Image (cartoon, rainbow, N blue to C red; front, side, top):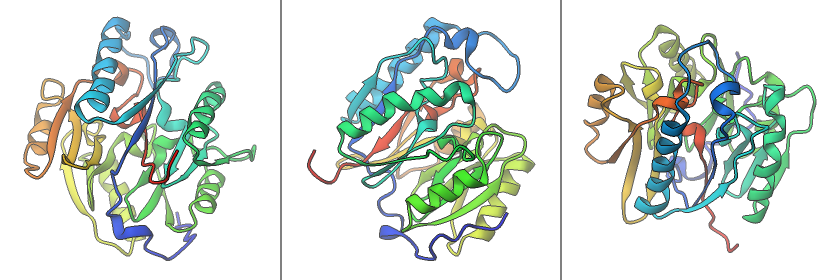
Amino acid sequence: MAGLSSSSGGGGGGGSSLGLCSHVVVRGLPESLSQHALRIEKGPEVDFARAEREHQLYVAVLKNKLGLQVLELPADESLPDCVFVEDVAVVCEETALITRPGAPSRRKEVDAMKKALESLNLNIVEMTDENATLDGGDVLFTGREFFVGLSKRTNQRGAEILADTFKDYAVSTVPVYDSLHLKSFCSMAGPNLIAIGSTEAAQKALKTMQQMSDHRYDKLTVPDNAAANCLYLNIPGKGHVLLHRAPEEYPESAKVFEKLKDHMLIPITNTEVEKVDGLLTCCSVLINKTSEL
């Protein structure tokens, strides 16, 4: 459980760079998602047409409402989970770590992502160690440090390679027991603000993170674990922007987000891909290009 203390430094800019974003990578939904995407437990079938509409709205918010440069990768029918791009790359500043996803069926998803990130001239680091696994859904970057969930999909070796890749930041590991990923029940809702679900397991994980860190974070507890996964952006001219789950899905959690008066709040419906464990951060990789392309 001990932190990897790859560095005791507080890391660039004390959290002020959190959410800064110029480019986003997303990927189309393959029709194979409905039948063949991995899921923790059997449940209702995905309505593909509705899933596609929800995803198109998500992408339109990023592209049209927020004015980001969106790179849209085509769906690959042989990769039913490929829409969940977050798992295959961790990007911080100008460096991208191409991961080695924990599920063997997802390993080929990295190829298209690698090409996309190369086109943005990022420094690419590939996780080639066959003993390592890492899903980006287990990686919480706070702007100051990294927390990495040790889950069914991410192991200690994967966390060590992440620490080695982003040496300017402290990296601590957090055990994840009854969820798919660390970010299945938490995310950053703003600078210094961790959104966290209210279950005992979620609160315990937060406690572990607080003990590992020499920094004090504010917490925003929401009743629903899935709703604690929100997408924070800091957009010049728009300020703090938060994509959060819609009130018709999680009414009590939406009320908590509505108290964030300094944020531009954008409710997003994500009912269909949630059936296969997809949440709001899962479907995008955020990049902030500060150097010329």
